[in-house]
Length: 453
Image (cartoon, rainbow, N blue to C red; front, side, top):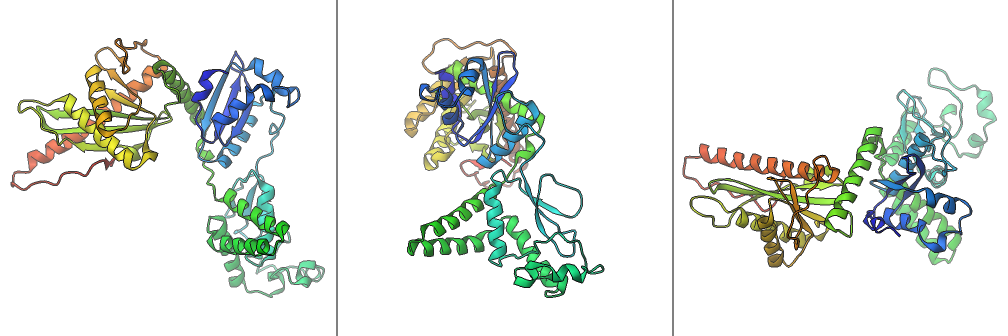
């Protein structure tokens, strides 16, 4: 198995298999990209799936991927890419059918809930799409039968100015059995019916608390009575709620976004290979310092996730270490900034990056390693020397020199330039405040890790 497969993230997403000439030959989705792609290269699976896998494997030259926010997002993006590329080894999804939406026809006086394959113009609202549509259909039928939101199930067109023909009312089974509130027959007022429609709208927007409690209670009651088949039905309703709860943000994956995401994954895979990482550096944090002859000294950190800026995780540090009276000490400032960030990470390990990038050369590496020893936490790190754009790796005497234009180097230079900009901007802000403050009052010191504003 190619060791580069180990670099794939353990996140939901879509993988795109290409032939040597770049043609897309297969698109798949995964709840865990790393585990799913590994399965293709396990000998035990080679002849257990018919002709497709043995024919596909020899043709795979490159595997791109795009991470998504959820499994449902991955399903929708997979469908979009299959329709776009028409891969030979994908047997499903090549037609013009799309995952269904739930349509609430608020443009009518008496709205209905129906299934729609595409969004249309007008005041009607759409929710979804829902890849696991059978689960959602069952849940909607339950909501109707349980009287939680009993919207009319018929397809007749009528309104307050234009009532329904009485002949249709008298032949309606739902009307005679009392399963429908029957706005057509005047059994419910316009205002009360619109309240039912509003309740359904709120539910579809994510207000699941009331119905979740009701379904959970019913499931537990059936389970306690050892009616496990009925309990399983309500368990499936809870799973459908979870499916609906996942926000679909695949709309942001326009063609240029997909291309950029694939390009970023290529850069990260190359970077991991160059510096000897065993996992993809999807989360990179970079550090730089700024000062003016030791005054208003600051350290700053920027964060990149999957090759893109993540402003929410930017951090700023006002340097507290004693510095030389006639100048600063980049070594001391780097050590303090990295140490304070590592201290934050120890309090919240979920923030731990895959790679630390330092602006500078060997001295900055040494300073950061000292910070790791002091904090009792080690994170893989590299530095980028601005003088010759050489990449320094701990334990290696010589820097890695890449030609200008190399994708991995371009990414590192972009991150380095961003953290430099951020540090200089913060330093100038403090310097300007110092120049304006002549009243002798002590200004408050920013807290550790003030967020990016």
